[in-house]
Image (tube, rainbow, N blue to C red; front, side, top):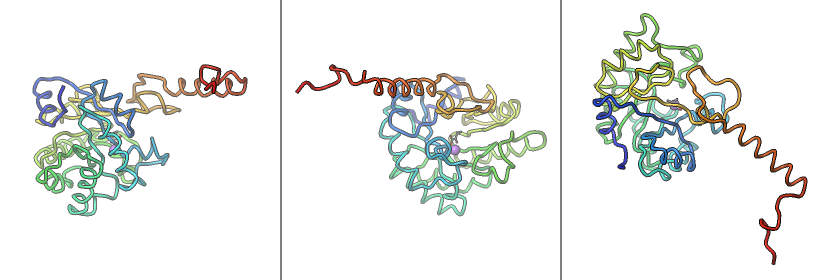
Length: 266
Ligand code: KIV
Ligand code: NA
């Protein structure tokens, strides 16, 4: 196996091979998903919701995020590590976006960055790509804009479909190597996928995207409560940990942990 590069993702699209992406925010998750041959790991700003306990992704800062990127990139042998540009670290100007992306690459040792937005982001995508920083774009429902979009809702319905296709084309032309589509109707996502040379990565965008992405705490069932419609739970880590913690508490209370084997005689 070799390190996943953008060229491999393009080749997989040409061959019609679908691939998967998972988020990771720490060493062991990254190590496990790398061992499972997930080709691309995303250090998402969904760390805001899934690691830091914020209500949205908006409060995430580069200072708190970069160490997570470093932990993931340090743990993988083969996966490409894509790091999100957090809200407020790239929307002000191309220079601001460049400086932030350089921190993700230099301090975080990411292999690529991801940013949210359509054609308006093309100048930044162009600058980053020219500077040697591969860019993954993210359109459809973009959580950093939830206050503008009126909450979690499907995007690109009806007349908005044409704009979504135009946005995707503009991002591809600017040099993006892939585009995440979040909460987009299946036919629209399929049309964007067909229109592009670069791979589309869907989350709530139907089965016709070139790739799929899930947040690991969702896919592994760590997060409690009702999951979004687009999530499939592949494990029930929350129950496993809950049971383990209860059993441990009971063992200690009963004096059955530690036993002689777990103790030092002298
Ligand atoms: O931050 C994140 O986890 C994401 C994925 C849902 C695409 O941006
Ligand atoms: Na994100």
